[in-house]
Image (cartoon, rainbow, N blue to C red; front, side, top):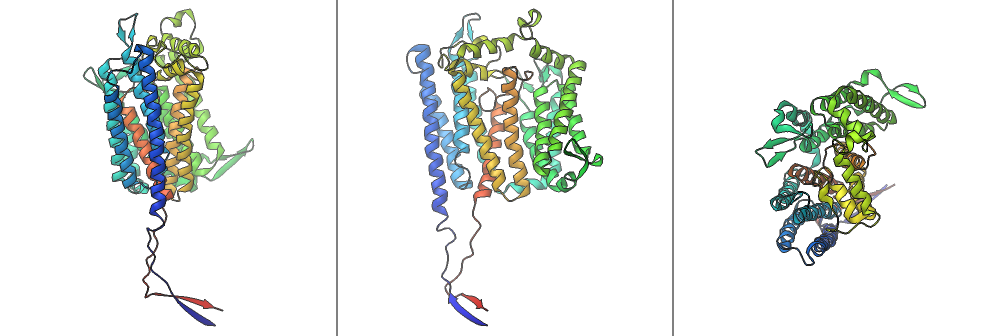
Length: 476
């Protein structure tokens, strides 16, 4: 046996690393410029369609948005240099299209009422809400340096999430009810908050922490039926509790959308943790049975099902299903390529700025345009799932998967509702709908995915060796 001694030069751990991080941020900046150019084009299209010239005040709108987006980019460079370079540009494009649509709805008067769908001040608020949302995005990146830190607060976050979900039902209907569903808290006559937007994020982190600790038990199989390994009866407690909570949301808040997202989030994360298809099927069957039972027992839920099944019935078309029918007519009139931004009549549809903003896009940019929007959502989900697959920390893996699925499920629920695939619900379309709570909540979601992506892509630190140190190689 002999030994060979060789000197080892000092190694700079940041030398080959930083150029790669800078390259990612350059890619992000280029994609942000492309997204902003599309937003400018869309805003100009609205102006020329309505007035034959660029919209008045467009420079202020676009300058304000550009400044806050550049602030988000600088925060990514500082706090998450290894994060996925597509997450911020994709969210920026969706948020910007939402701002364009809010401006468009405020710039044209409905001849039937003599007023636009929303006031100019409400359109201006979309910029303010975007600034608050991106401020929350930056705060999350700055304060949460490692996503697994949230695992320490599993039960605290769970309690906060349940409280926020239940809060509208605990308050008087006069300040919490809108169109039969109790989903918000109204402050005065102008400002509202939807606690569910933040409850979903808290519960996603709580579910991830719980399932990391319990996944080995929940993965155990019981009886085998129809080719599926069913879970043991003693392990059904968590899903039964979640099912009961989702039904309570249906009964006391009459909110099908939130109930579906709540149940779907837990079942999806349970599947990610255990890789058992039986949990997916069991959760789906339980929710469908519970929803059907609620449709017979709860008046508002039953009305939603009736609107879904019979929207064109004489008793519904001018009353309870009027909103849905107008949205369907609007999307149908848009055809394949749409009428053009500013050339349609989306203001005819009630609450088009919030619940049915997707139908406004369908009317003015057509099937091709809304498919492109759905593709953008799909890309965000894909990048989130990619981060989940890359990160090694089990908690971060579950959290990224849960957040990605939650975004996908929310888009499915609202788009499925306005197209009559499923009953219409009152949840918002992420980034596109008017509202502060939704925008802030979705920017926090993007920040968490960016933080997890940064953690997954960040190279391990390299030990620095002095020139005086030696490396001993033993030969046998």
